[in-house]
Image 1 (tube, rainbow over the protein chains, first blue to last red):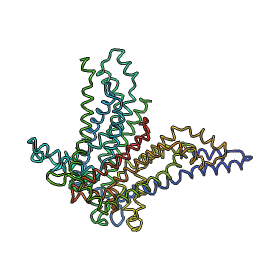
Image 2 (cartoon, rainbow over the protein chains, first blue to last red):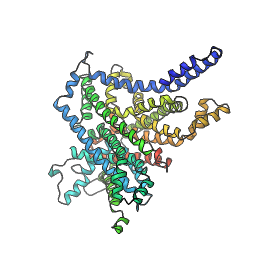
Image 3 (tube, rainbow over the protein chains, first blue to last red):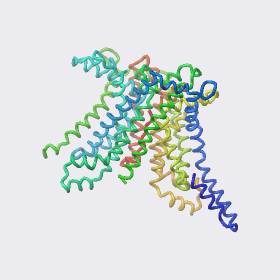
Image 4 (cartoon, helix red, strand yellow):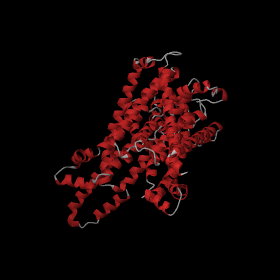
Length: 306
Length: 262
């Protein structure tokens, strides 16, 4: 936007003799902005204004006057525990899924692993990271639900999972389910970064007598750390905003922020819209913060891997 | 030690672990969906589903939404990305920033905002078009990324100068010169959009539409076995879409779009 004003002053300062030319130029410049105008209009209408509405509504009463009553909701015990649980679930699955994805991605690159495995793995990862939501929830109910196939296997082996307090509807079950789409996503994000660890670096380290472990400890890992952390932040946001998976898995009987919002919306719509908005506002703040960290880390990585 | 190193034990361990994590739930779901009695197996549950008219309705509805979303996304984004690449490089960071915003604003928050905003306009909030309009926003991050990567790989300035020198207008250039070169990027992004729209639950359920995912959830409440069969079918759809992307972008993993909308 800044350069468009710069460009128009340039035209304004042109000598009067080429006035016709400058009008034509200006018209062309206008046309060029017109080509991106629909995009800006669209995102304003269907993304920016609805988001603004969430923020405004979070600070309004039903009659429309300014109020902090929505914010008060954010300090109530149930809400606080919902945020705590959602953040906990997202952190666990981002770190566990992130580490698993990292190990698997690195495994495909190590010597002695056939090359055809990599494309197979990325395709599988593409499927698994997109196979989320309602079908995934039912797949896990069929797997580790109370009559799930693996639950029954364990029973045959004499281990009664459900007798020991395990349930697919709890935080552990949810974590296992989330990791199903988290670790393949990690593979997709981190594989290009791992491939970017150049062979020359390794050879240079080996030539001065570094063991593989030393190479990773002092060169590879520090180089990759920003990408890894960035990817984990993305996984965090991915889990934090999940609604379909926990809702379908627990029929809504779990205290997570998205599920709580769904309850507000599915209940009496007109009752207290500012409460749903206050929660949604809280979500945007948490994810916005995570993405800010991601952007900062990304900037650092880009410098290294150029 | 040297002998051990030749066989990458840990690498195989992690690969097998990943394979097990990926395949076990699928196997379990498949077995679940084929159980017709205590010790009998069959395709009974699949038959029940296929003969349920709601299955066909919801699937066709979601497919239609997916195609609408793809068409609308491309019509909106191709000229935009073309424009910022060719004429408005200064707008590029802004568009890039906006295109990652749907990740910051989760679908459920977007639904809250849309409901708050259009509550007073019942015909709009209950029109199926609204759903496709919102899915375009959900698809924005990877549609943009795919088109941006595709156009970055082309020498757009040379191509469009060449087209201009033979008298082509910019829409003609876009259609006859740029688009054929973008086929891979466009198709890959489209298949990903289709996969995502077919599985989308959050927005459609909160806006009270009977999409495919809403149907699966509805069935799952009462029929665990039918739901397992539906999960297998749904997995098959995702598989087809991803396989298409893989075939299209073979050997160019960096062009593959990644989605993160749950």
